[in-house]
Length: 70
Image (tube, rainbow, N blue to C red; front, side, top):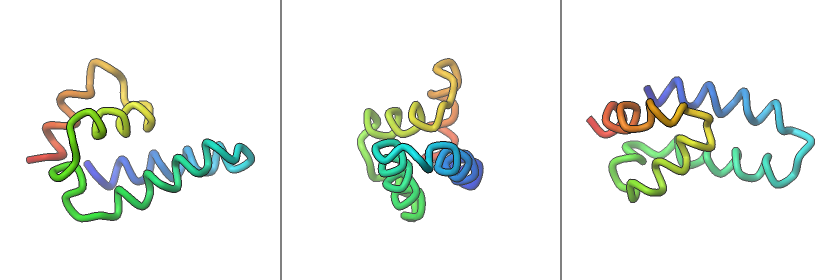
């Protein structure tokens, strides 16, 4: 699942390459996704915010989060 999120983030990085603020956000997300078990150590609110930034549909957030922490 984390690899899928990394791919989504890469696409969003390319899409927003000309928008400084968005670019910085996705660069930060990229750094976070490189940390082993990053979703296991962060607050659930932060995890959901990252998943929303990665455009995961609202109805899938809970299941994606559960998959990431298992």
